[in-house]
Length: 491
Image (cartoon, rainbow, N blue to C red):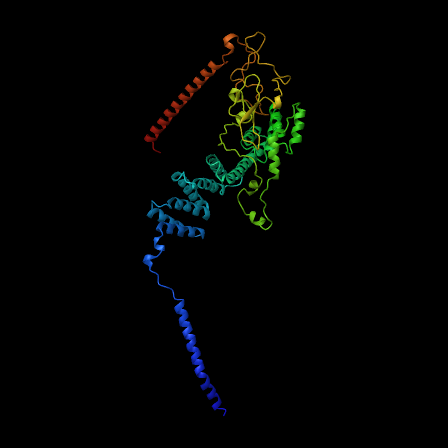
């Protein structure tokens, strides 16, 4: 009984198992039949109707997006060479420049800038031309160094951003370009200010004043403009040019009313007995908006990584957020020699403006008036601040009018070659102008208008030229003699 029972049960369940297996196989085959893909005729496929240049462009765009820049550029170059009349030609050139820009590095950034410039040259009327111009500026912007390093890239970035804002002032990217231009000009102004501060501490007033004048005139949105005006006031106050120093102190009170230097500037003006000006409403509104403007902040988690950055991140953080930057190209002709001394023509240059003032007898400074937060205009304010009379030549009282040389009992105005008494000269410095003889009699009539010593100066110049020519001839003759001797005696 024990042996027949398992055999009987197996004989009973064997048909059931076979039936189940057959059913499962049938269901699997039917499922395969239902899910079997239909064969597609490739000759009538929709993909064959797509343009091959578009296929290359889409494939290259996907490669660049995924970081395969070299493969993407190879496909784009194939598109340009194979289909020179393709509608994707301009997009391909722009995408090649974008791939270099995204890949980064000095060499790749140079290639990107060149590619963007080529796009602007060949496709200047396309909407993407403004984007290409901005990317040219951004290529230089990303390579900027700190203010105390090489400023070549910063200067190039400033010029390219200015070009963008002048060509596309209403472009949607104009706000971004304007803010980057403020940051670039902050970096450039900081570099000039550091050099000026070095000379200021060292005691070289002429070199310090020349750089500070350029900073205050060209970059009114600079975060340390009030400090630059204060240093200029102290420089000219030290060389006993009170009227010019008062102008710079007045600029602090008028154009930077919320500055920490305002109380000190007011006390200086009161001590000089110069009227204290009222703050400019536009400048005050600009400073209030600047203080309330949001600024980027680095989180605690990212601060250690920010220390590894080599760019001027600190200067960019303190750059202005409100107000139009300077859009004029740099054309600074201020000479450090002519800042505190009059040069050969008694000329004083104490700020910006479109020209210089030639003075005779009484010199008054010309100070550029640029209100931050408003459109940068080059205006000039002659004389002292707020209508104060210029200081007298002898320090006693201001002269009422220039003396007339034709009237008896008066002295003639300083002649050419004579340094004006109002020309500021630093301590220890000397003017290059030749002083006229003080005991010379005053000319009368038409002789008063003629410059004194012009003929003598011309004769001296002719004599010097003749002497220089003789020296050159003597040098040539001696050199020829030496060559002849060397030929005869080679050792």
